[in-house]
Figure 1 (cartoon, rainbow, N blue to C red):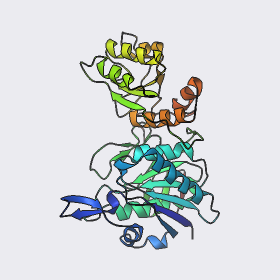
Figure 2: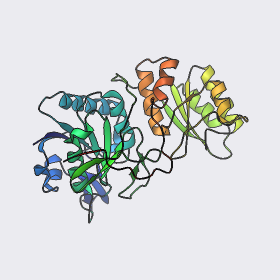
Figure 3: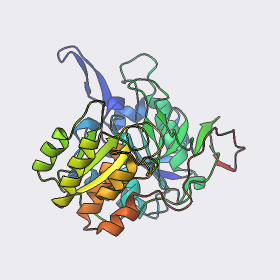
Figure 4: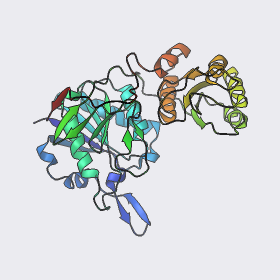
Amino acid sequence: MSRVAVLFTGGTISMVVDPAAGGKVPTLDGAAILARAPGIEHIADLVPIDLGRTPASHFSFAKLFEIAGEIRRCQTDPSVDGVVVVQGTDVIEETAFLWDLVLDGQVPVIVTGAMRAASDPNDDGPDNLRNAVRCAASPALRGAGVQVVLDATINPADGVTKTHAGALDAFQCLDTGPLGRVADGRVILERTRGSRRSLATDHAAAGVLLLTAHVAMDGALLDAAAALQPPGIVVEATGAGNTSAALVEAAGRAIEQGIVVVLTTRCPAGAASAAYAFPGGGATWIRAGALLAGHLSGPKARIALALGLGAGLDRAALTELLADPPGWGPVIGRAPVPPVSGAD
């Protein structure tokens, strides 16, 4: 039987309604969460590790690197075949991506949680946890980086997005589709992941900001952000990378101050590009000195930029880190793909 380390950090999966508090609060420890998933002990030999009961929205970079260190320790333990991280879903797309960047072990790392609290009727936590353990124990996912597994769907950390505040199927890879799924207790891969970004660091630059462009937006907000002297600013532009002319002019002023500016799209799928050359179009952002973020969302681009700056990368290296890896590509109108591998 495979051996899987399960790191518990809190989140909705650990929460129950507290009448005094007026809502859901972290309550259950790892043992209590496991006890609510009958049969999980038959999937793998489990090594539970409690790392607190922290709402995911409270995570700091320091805490994420601390968890990364614990994951790495488990990956280097020859008796461990896989690692599961249990956390809140609010920022899974960011935390999983950070770990995907800094971890390079072959041992599978699966991040999971729940959309419904333990005290909710028909909560999804037990099924998600069982499926995450199945994936962590699967040889098919060795070397595939960090995956997010909820609602029986396997999504790579660099492409997954939380698309809904409360739906069970909230986590999706909108550009590529999922890597695979769990069906009838089997891990089934529908495609290979391919290349991924990697960065050896245990430090993130503090103060990297994220701004979203909107209609009738001038450059005042970006100027105010630049006045804080952050090391970097990520701008989620409209459409394929377009904003008002005033906003790109403000970006140019920030770049002249030495602030790294990264351009992505506020759309849930797709990427910013140099396709449009009118004032404020993506091409004018690039001419002003902004870097493109490939198909990374705004929150993920901020993670990559903060870690890249923390690692002391120069402009060329930051450009390479932010760009889509070689062979990475969106799938539009994706047809079903026959399974290419599977394991119990």
